[in-house]
Length: 68
Image (cartoon, rainbow, N blue to C red; front, side, top):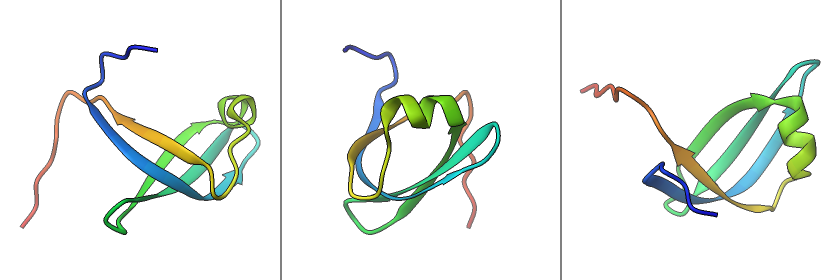
């Protein structure tokens, strides 16, 4: 599948916390950093996400904040 999002990061699922409507997916990137995604519960279930799964985190945003 081709995607317009160019910021694609290989990751491994660490945890999946299912709520009533939403799910929190914590992923570990190759350098050890963590990224958290909030997705719908239905999407998490359709993807059958579980710890250890290799996934691609795709970031598509209109702004990026930088702090120092």
